[in-house]
Image: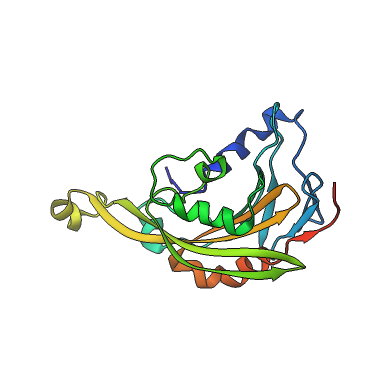
Length: 227
């Protein structure tokens, strides 16, 4: 059975039909535009990427608003052959009610990178709290809004099953270790009482292939109303 690594929040997509009575976090327009009426923003998916929305929770707003998933993604040939784990390129939209500025929120994330525990619900639903290293950060304007961009690398280990390869059986006991990292691109925005995060994850091997699409989506956020 093939396994794969995806951001934790995608697990919830499998149970959405069972909670169809819950209100959706937003709507999808023409298969490529996500509109969040609560936040008063929209984000555009790149060509070849699919938007999936979440549903609000019963007693509070869902911090996970939507996720944009690449449809035809590549997998390392060895990982595919040996049925190893892989990461699907995704961009997840989060929202947090806070009085922190984007600079303060970015500093908070960097301060918690190497901590095992966090009381921040968004961070608990990302890979940022384990084996993650800071790469760079900048502040840019995106459609009139200030955006704090931070890039990270998230290190991982994959164990590949080589038991089907007789030549390797005695040498490595049927298991091959692969070590690499994912690239995480984070864009932080502030609108009213909301901090909005666009959190993109992609394997290092395929990052250049997806970089333009990711940058396009991180730069596509626009304000559409002020709810």
